[in-house]
Length: 136
Length: 256
Image 1 (tube, each protein chain N blue to C red):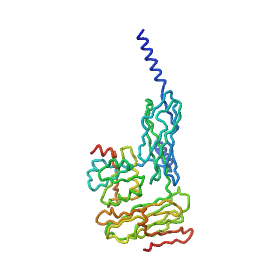
Image 2 (cartoon, chains in turn green, yellow; image 1 turned 90 degrees about the vertical axis):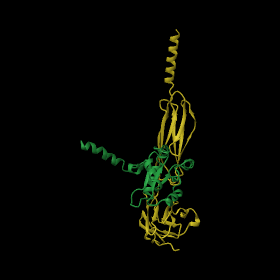
Image 3 (tube, one colour; image 1 turned 180 degrees about the horizontal axis):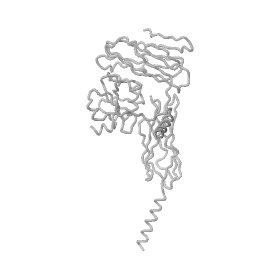
Image 4 (cartoon, rainbow over the protein chains, first blue to last red; image 1 turned 45 degrees about the horizontal axis):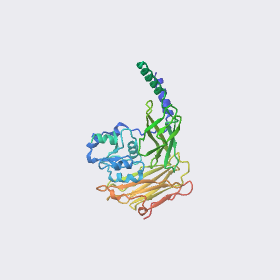
């Protein structure tokens, strides 16, 4: 019975070992709800991962634009505002968008932003911009 | 008699509307694209044919991401007609696996929504980490390291890398760890005041440049100190390390 359960899982693990992962997965601990994010107040830096046109139309007050269209050009503005005491909240359009996850992942893995205790300081906003509008 | 005529008409109309069915058949709803190192766009052509017996009208064709644009050839697809929807993903500074969707809504009541998926793999020749080094104000002025790895998808040998600092406030030293790995050590001149800069890392024989941001934190944010790496006026030191397999390494800090 155990073998019947384990064997397919092993097979799947071997099959998908070198396969490309197309979606950025993110643990629940790295997501943040609108209410909690708001409660962080000045400690929070809001990062808008949507395209520039959408950011220009409207965005969370004080948010910094950062997307993968012009990553290198946009990143310095965020880094100049960041200190290890700050928490970064990344959002994109809605619950279905993936841009905020990709930007958050890049900030964690490539830029390697961490708080002063060496813990994660980059969070993805649940519900994105639409969620923020609803909670406004 | 009238009732019979009405019933017959209703039945006939019902049968006709049931048989005159729209049916848009897609060749593929998911397309994988592998882009070249200099490509600006990943392009996918989603082909379709109306194999039904009535025209199909596109109500909306909407990409999920602003980074993707779509182009339709026609608003309405006559019976038997073929066509395609072209989706273009702007690569920008994206790397690795990217998945973007386009939602197509039609007036076909049986199949009103189709999700098209473009999966693009954008090869990244080098992995540079971290792309940000910082020192707290007053922290000991010790060097910190950026690692540059040549990834397996890059098929060409890398003889060496260049590290071009935007500011004399940061000294750099390159060390070759193996034929696929380099380390760039960065040392700030002073950690008692807020300074910032960038280092542009460029493997030899490659046009790709990687920017790492550097910052010594003072009492406040150093917003206006971030220099533009593309601005030649901010360019400072440069050093070059050749592959020791080809010739001896020239491994030195930049001289002011």
